[in-house]
Length: 456
Ligand code: UDP
Ligand code: UDP
Image (cartoon, rainbow, N blue to C red):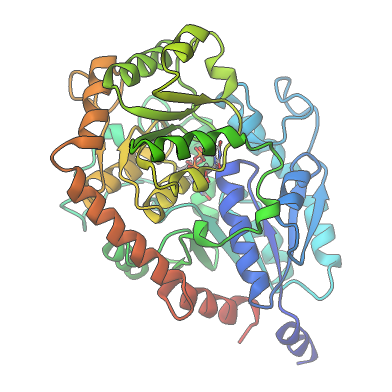
């Protein structure tokens, strides 16, 4: 009883974000929300990721604990690679997640020593081993998921959707790990481990809002356990301005957008997230397509990808039309700039949420992971975007500059442009309402805190 009193008066949760920007950013928004509702939060990360997390949480009363990232586990996993954003190639993913398992003893030791005692672990799905930690302590484990569109399924038929006849999935919608010849490969094995741990956990925290995908959510919560709790879109949680990014924000980007606005121009924002590997040839083709489309664009490219391609001449020719940025930008700020009216996006879940919240239609160009499913939702379910297609109509494969030109024009000025804009605006308003006090996501978080963190 005394224990319960303690946990009721000082609710305390441990949060362990996966080391990838796309996973860390939304979970830190969740941390801010929890703290603002009176929950004490201890975040577990590694020395390499800690500066980013500490800076993002400036002014927030959350504790950060730095664990040691296991060294010398794999020859290519050199010192300093403690985040997937630093991968030279995604082939390091399995060695990386395998290495994180070695963090468990230290995690468990610190977890047990925390006071007030932790009443719940919120873990990224990519750490299946935190289920053991939670079980040992006899506390619930909640799994943080980017999106709801891909829940855990049974081992044999990972993605059959018999209840959704209107969703026509093809093999191209799935990561190669789920189709031959990789079916027994390490990526598939890892995902099965992730799904099994999720199934045996107490809940799934989803960065979405129930008005966005009511049918899917209802299905998940009818057919599957554990329950999915939609508490987003988390990008609507304002971070303290001073704390946004440790990276220098190029002021010129916003100035350029202001200039475009003053000239009455409409800008296409082009960005493929923090992970996508795009071939040199394809990047070149994107550059040519953008040039041919004569659309104003702001293109954020990872510097490692663009050096030789986007040469000075291209940038010189584009001077009045487009801007290429290789630094980290504040994507949310850009999407919310009134000149931005389209987003060519890889459909990472955060990007989709951020685009919806900013009322910006999407030119969907998914690259990997569950992005193909997200793209289908954007285009077919929500009607707020169009799909990038190769010449032969396929959703995968090389896309020529002619196709890019055509699709960019269609998004920005095609006959459906107004309709897409109207729909996305409606969704953004619903998203805002969901996050406001008394809204669906606000209320769901309240229930979640009561059920798992305060132990009511
Ligand atoms: N992002 C950003 N600036 C950049 C690149 C990315 O703010 O220069 C943010 C973006 O707003 C989003 C996250 O990084 O919140 C990327 O997540 P997403 O799910 O879209 O894609 P991923 O990087 O995981 O593939
Ligand atoms: N995934 C998961 N748990 C999570 C996040 C993602 O099981 O907490 C799965 C998701 O189903 C997808 C894959 O991991 O198939 C890759 O997800 P995501 O795109 O978020 O990862 P990224 O490649 O951006 O690091």
